[in-house]
Image (cartoon, rainbow, N blue to C red; front, top):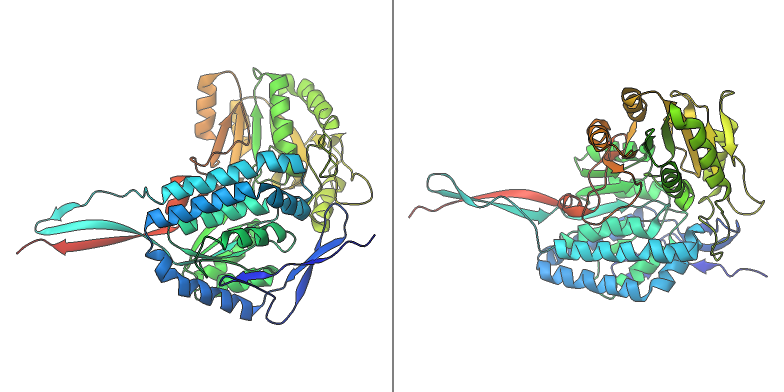
Length: 479
């Protein structure tokens, strides 16, 4: 039976359009490896059109009241909730994610996050007005920055789109958003839904490849460029944006350490680590991929973790028993496989370490032990269902190993000792430290890293403020 290939289109100025020159990209299912859609390969003319639309819409959207922007975002949240099954279907087709988990673990947080930023639109905080020089009153204005060029990744196409457009729109900016070339379907559907509630040009979607994203960042119109992606891509965006001093927001890679002390509850920790390491096939910048275990419980922990991996199932999106689906694309399967193939002789694969099946980009839950701090798989982001295990002797060495990578996004500590947990939370050089848990996120708390994991915050009031600028206004009060 031949699968019908759908045609996806850009969303510019309230209209769906093909690329100006008619070029397209094949969109491949990671489950079947078959083409299920085509999307526009947007070029300079398309970027110009989207930026022109966003720039033209900006003054009116900027001047709407926070209450009006809130109302629009709340309607979008309600509509996403009502169209949840359609969004889940598109996202599962995009990514191969399990339908049930996508429905329960992604749609509710997305809707909640949009509602959070809808409320944040009406609660901008600033220092009080006052007279700091005789006869003069100073006030501080918080204003939107302007047009925002945003690039979302393929690991969470829907949710990362929300993290980008919700604070930007709530603050009064207009948006040109590009989904990954491998996962455009759910973003195009989101544009269709959002178009009912936003003025033309306020929200635009451009499909395309890296060159499309590069043209968006290099375009003179945007005041801000925001990307979630690889370190390499982030560096390129920062370099490009520097040429005309654009504001930049970067959420890049991660290599989260999971520090397990000898007093940790092993069963609880293994359960938490395996869930947070294998969820979404480990394609998560905060995934629990790098476990550091005290030497006294190392062997017991590895045995338990290997069993948990063996009990974890990957498979088809409609299988309710699977914990995760395929890797996103052929290049990602090659990358993950390459890390395992290049393991040093002293490493030991305790579980998995191989592709599953001969169709689709499925990879087995994998645990690797016997590793050293300078090994490639310790230092570099795998972005797959692979958990590494190292041992440490004391707290000082645990901190040294944990911090001894170029990434600094997320981490966790597992211990019953409160004082130790507090010391570790201070010493770990990561944007987030979880204690006796790993991976939960809430809209009210910031998400973002240090070092090569980027800068700027998603979620929270801090993420909202990133999409605003500060203006000082001083006026004479003398007669």
